[in-house]
Image (tube, rainbow, N blue to C red; front, side):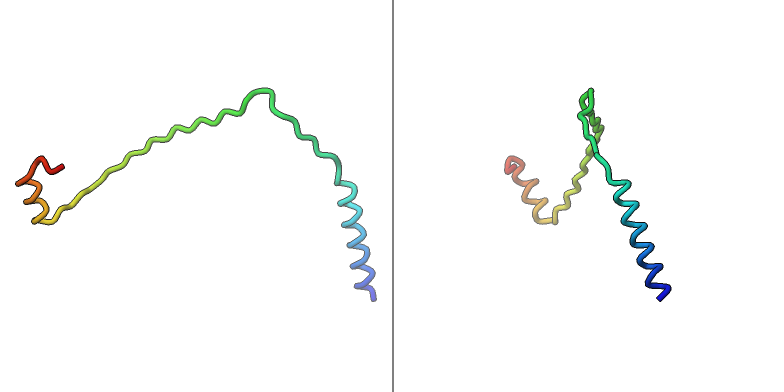
Length: 65
């Protein structure tokens, strides 16, 4: 029985706190524009391996590509 009263008291306390803290929220736009500076350096390295026969065909026909 005592636990039931304690539970009700805690529930009432929690409800009271949430209603006391629930106020207005004001949102205003900033005076200056938001600047996002992205310094990104992208480097790509491509490694190409050819099998022997393909390499010979390319060497025999240099204008193929």
